[in-house]
Length: 158
Ligand SMILES: Nc1ncnc2c1ncn2[C@@H]1O[C@H](COP(=O)(O)OP(=O)(O)OP(=O)(O)O)[C@@H](O)[C@H]1O
Ligand SMILES: [Mg+2]
Picture 1 (tube, rainbow, N blue to C red):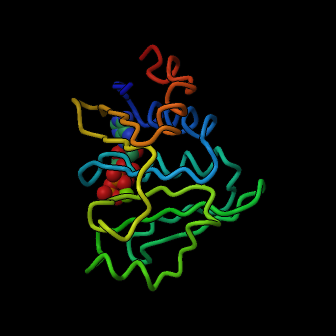
Picture 2: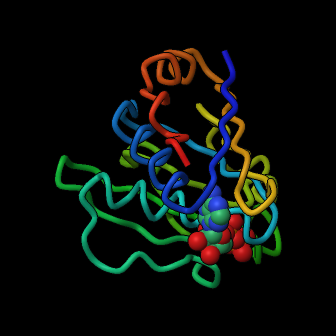
Picture 3: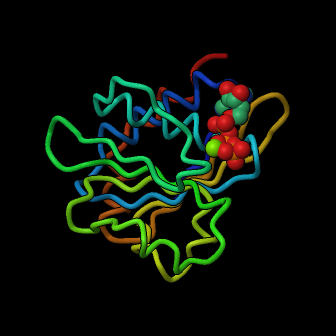
């Protein structure tokens, strides 16, 4: 089951992040699609905050990856592959699939073949002054996850 949502403002994007984080299975792999400025980093930042990350959440535009230890154990990985030259560069980042409690990947198509397969794909697009979000599960646990998500309050009344 796919889901489509209208996100009227950045606060709605943040509510979507919280709803997804609250039902997230351990080790979830999320691909974040959307043009420049679509709201991928806004979603990732709010998601990490929901998981208890309190320090600065930097955009991994130049570092390709930022890593966040989680209180619950493991670490969250936030990747932005916009500036990667070749998917092979991912090998040099020393990312450990097994230890990652979460993968949030912006511009995943640029890492094709070198990333773990997605459980969930989130596509964001400009829609008027807001954004449209399309959620597509890509694994059995991704489907269970989406079914368990409380998305009803994400769009809000605005
Ligand atoms: N639902 C929304 N409605 C309106 N503005 C939004 C919404 N969600 C996020 N924004 C705003 O869009 C702007 C760009 O967001 P963001 O930096 O997250 O985009 P991005 O997809 O990560 O872009 P890039 O590919 O350049 O990294 C921010 O100013 C953010 O507040
Ligand atoms: Mg970004």
